[in-house]
Amino acid sequence: MKKKHLFLAAFLAANIMTGQAAFAAEEDAEPEEIVAEATGEAPADTNAAAMGEDVGMANPMFEYPDVPSLERAVGFPVYYLPGNLLALYHPAAHIYSIDRYVSDIRFQSKADDSRITVRTALIERIGTDDISGYYGEWTQQHAGDVKRTPVWIAQTATGMRVVRWSAGRFAFAITIEGVDDNTFRNMLKNFVSVADRFAHKYRNFRLNYKPKTTAGQAAETTQETPEANENPAA
Figure 1 (cartoon, one colour):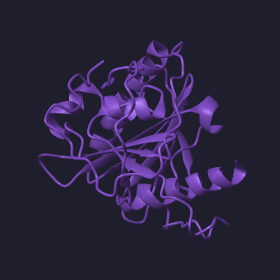
Figure 2 (cartoon, helix red, strand yellow):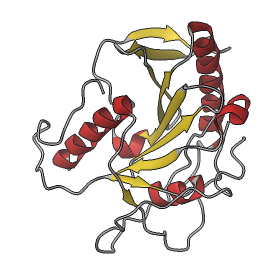
Figure 3 (cartoon, helix red, strand yellow):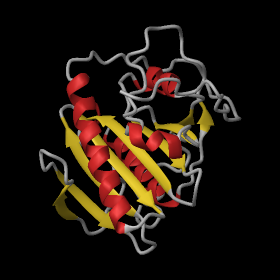
């Protein structure tokens, strides 16, 4: 188990900074109740060998056609976007899970080159509240929301901002790039405020995770359909 989590940590680090992901397409989940509708509301690359992992271990990145498919795979509700960002960033450019432990949803602005990555994980399942994948220097600040929620913020050499925090049973991490300081602070306030409502809404949900038992994965990714993320707003 420790070895598996080291490998997961390597992928958390390697992919949040680059915006790139090597992935396999997730097979269609067996029919089951969807745990929740979409809510809406690395440093230098780290590789498996450097983390003491076997080079031949299977790739843990999977891509999905929509948020409900992702939620069926990971077994818990995942954070999407605050409602005021939907017009500019919805639909998601890519919807991933990292080894079915962490959701990793990536957005590209329709108006400029700004990009957002949003990660969610269930703390009780992953055993940590830090899913950022960033191991550089952090500063603790508050998000500017009514509750003055503490968040950890880092900025990379390229100007990308990385933020991590937790609420209730959930760990959250976002990266935001291509926006000015004022826009970033407004975005952060909205992300944290909506995440707080998200954590409250799903505080009593029951984990609905079914490990895959089929052999192998499809070689090509599924494509996002226009119907994906039909109801992302909380």
